[in-house]
Length: 218
Image 1 (spheres, helix red, strand yellow):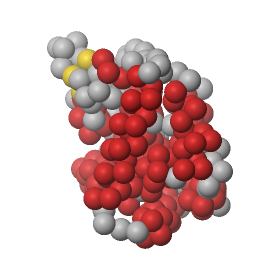
Image 2 (cartoon, rainbow, N blue to C red; image 1 turned 90 degrees about the vertical axis):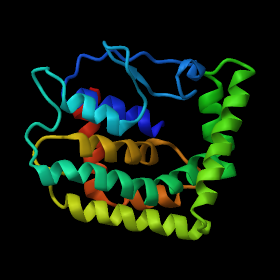
Image 3 (spheres, rainbow, N blue to C red; image 1 turned 60 degrees about the vertical axis):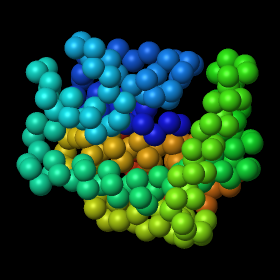
Image 4 (tube, rainbow, N blue to C red; image 1 turned 60 degrees about the horizontal axis):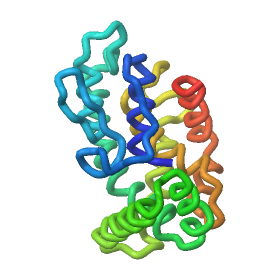
């Protein structure tokens, strides 16, 4: 359900990176107070997907992330990262954290049953407050935020076309980035699911999510 955690996991598994993932219910141990984060052998802490992708691209392992991509394809990661943060992320924050039906029936229980009481309550309010601030900073109505996300999904569908992945026959960092946004929206059972219904009605994006799940998580 967490965008960044899914992106970290997908990127590392795509290139078979020897990274041990620990499932934590103690986000406060992170340098940022949230998950995910990576501690490298040099004791460097990496908390965002862009730096994590750079780390994997510069690794000396047998399979290097994005090794087969041309420079223009490598640049796609930064371009789409900015686009998705602007167009899809606010809609996901609105859908998961600010919609009272989705939050009360699904999200709240999903998190609090794994977090220590009373920290879980504090953490959830902190997440909701951050989500609310991020959505308000767009200065857009709820309807406009949803429409922006729908347009972005349509654009992703057009870029993917009939291809299995976004940059060819093999998954890459761009696929991990996009997967992190789409998988929670597609797979979380939501009572208020307008955006989810649009994604579910986009066959090539659904196939893409299922393909990454099979490739990287099974």
